[in-house]
Length: 154
Image (cartoon, one colour):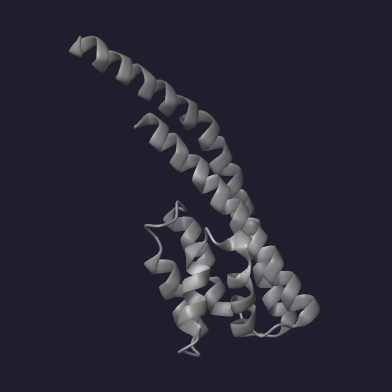
């Protein structure tokens, strides 16, 4: 159980780092290629690196039958809350992308993505601190609990 809890913290750090890479790549595609939103999501979904962010693939699939990016982005995030290890705050920050991506000019989208990146970076810094403190504690408690149970049973 302790290892499970510690692994969950580590997975959150990994997914936040991956989310930052996603935001950066989206920003680059918008700035240099001026990629339309639906096409942008399709290109991100095709990249293997973002496979653990299940909501990208689902959003891409949903956009094949819908043109409402905001709705499909938020729905995909919401549908995958239990599959990913991000907190509700992390997910809400990512959900905000749906409100501005494709809804303003290139510079507005870039600025909004940069703001979201800075918030996610702070969340990542906090997650790393929590992982360092609580991860060790969870592993130690798991070991001690297991040792205690084995002593009790024998």
